[in-house]
Image 1 (cartoon, chains in turn red, orange):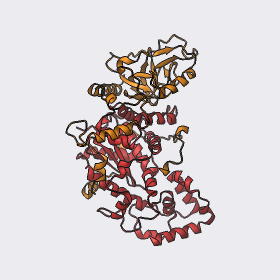
Image 2 (spheres, helix red, strand yellow):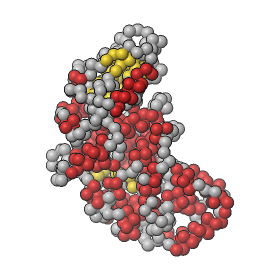
Image 3 (cartoon, chains in turn purple, yellow):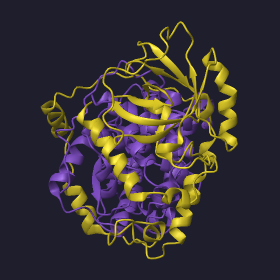
Image 4 (tube, one colour):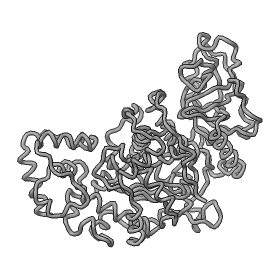
Length: 304
Length: 251
């Protein structure tokens, strides 16, 4: 970690004027895509695209793309993957995957197709349906996305699934959880103790994320949820789906009785569907009137 | 009516039938009008207001005070020359297939599910509607004596009125506390709450299973192609003014 911080300091110094001029607050708001483009401009020789398999020793070189990401969220892609694996492993300890490979494969295919529209090609996406009747969905850094069986049961079309997955994919691309975690740690705090390839539990990451998968129960700021609704709806539309999938699911949730136990955790961590519909309505207005997408009710995989 | 619309309506009806008044008991939002039952509750005042904006202030007031907000203002004459008779030819089937909803912002009703079609009426924020059908981004609704198509995102389904900030939190906390056994509404099936998440232990086996389910970008493209799904260019949506905030990270 010492080495890494030193390297970062050197890198910052060598970027001189450009780096000093960076407005940190603004950077947090920028899309990762913009960050990557910025890196390309400051560094004509393109670095190899970082991926999960990047060995730790590559950090001994100054990778400006990694540096851009690190400045943005406090975490490198490697660290993002480690955090995502630890959260996901814990979440799966609380509730296992549904034992239905056709279902899981279907959700992975739809999810990857939607994620292809997100512009984060370096992420390895994982999708899973959790075996609980609770109505909820989760995203963890590094591209880990989960939908509960209870939520899946509410869906009627592939477009609705695409909308739900789009919302979760947006949490990953907008790095919402990483931004929250950043506040509780220093840049580079993870060090190099383990790699994202490790099979077991990662104690260093666990210390960062608290107990078990409680980070998934804390939820995000409501503005992050509204942003994920906007971005997710657009991802689904870009994938060729009817854009009204996510709003339709929100309508179905809004119609559930307030005391339904299946939504208790969902409503702890998300704004009420009525608020989400209203906020999304402000953003969308007539802007998607011309978009004609597919609902694909026939291809939608139904459980049991 | 499209089959999907029917399914939606049927599911709404089922939810209502199964759950009855529970939402009211469980601490419905304060903005919930003291109206009796949703289906019978809404003979809203049909205001002869000449222009839609006129209903705006009343609607805002309805958000914070307990009044029956249902007010259907007739649209300006240039938009709806005929005295209503706005109902599209496809009349809804028997009264069974409708679900309650609340208008989330001052909106127009259109003759067809398109903003280029004739405006038949205006509805105020907070107005109660009956949802009769759905098509893409549009809902067919009945507001008092008027009916027409309204943008899907301008209405919320369900009987919770304008719903609103904090309601979900209160309800969530209450149900968690009052249900230590964590049994979900469907008897015998397991829920998932924050205690479960906090106490969760890393499960490497399940994570390996998740890894094994991964598909490649190539597989996803093939899968998309099989349904003739093609990538479309759609611009980002703007961040609405009301949501304008650059400080959420500081939460």
